Image 1 (cartoon, helix red, strand yellow):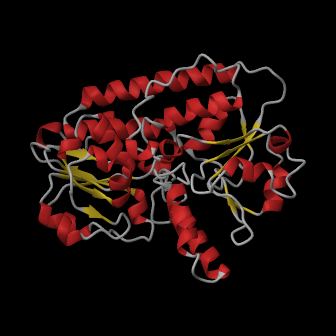
Image 2: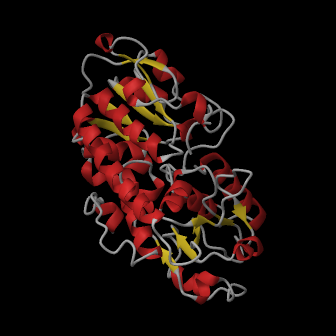
Image 3: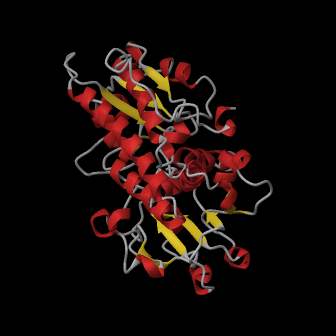
Length: 382
């Protein structure tokens, strides 16, 4: 498939799966959580970091086959509004885009930063949860995985922006919307930072905000390149190994979900001058680890995006059997403040990247500034 989740709300989706199983048997709850991760473990997400994720399903196309940059994505002349979306589908935009249905929080955040919040006439439930305070009050909301196609078509939007997570079960859940003549653009969750930039530019092109989108991507890339440059100069001994986890093991739910290979989170960890402890030669993107397997990795740093567990850092530091793990011994366990940003593939992953950099190598990145600082929504801060 092209792209990964997190990324769309991976952490939220996985945690929701675990919580939804609390009233059932341990076995069924574990199964529910595992099924959720297999279909969402991309954003987050994103979508999510993560935990936050794109969809890892056979129904998705490969990154090589479907990666399309905004600058080269036109299927025909722009005059007739014809483009190729990031999933490789030919779409035709109306002359003006004044009504948008955004079906992923990552896309909603991009639209808001492009100054288009007032054009969002409906959204998915995660977008409403995270960014409802920045959208028009009481707009319709839809389930990302099973949207009400009839109602979406009845809204007669100019554009529907989707996420790869919606296709994780192999079905086109927007088939009826397309048949109604609505322009539906599919944006699979990004697996790389470059794909995030291309998706931002694609949305800018669709909405007539190319210049704003290009400026956002330029600012994003400048910051990432600066961190990558600093990361390449680290010479303080063996590079630190980092285990980024989206869940905290308990007696009832002992599985630990971690960011593995071939995701933009893996790229972030590497760019910061670190080793991804959960990366494997098999390329598994979101490995489900037993505690024994996680302990054997002996990470130097543990970064958690689990915002649901109370006192999560203290919980990790006091876990039995982890006493000899470097991250525990040296108390290098951190809860990521910008967990939502990491899980949702858009320019705000930079905020999470800056935070991670300062946690892992504070001396190296002490003067680093976040160009997107202060733009988190109130719903994320509270």
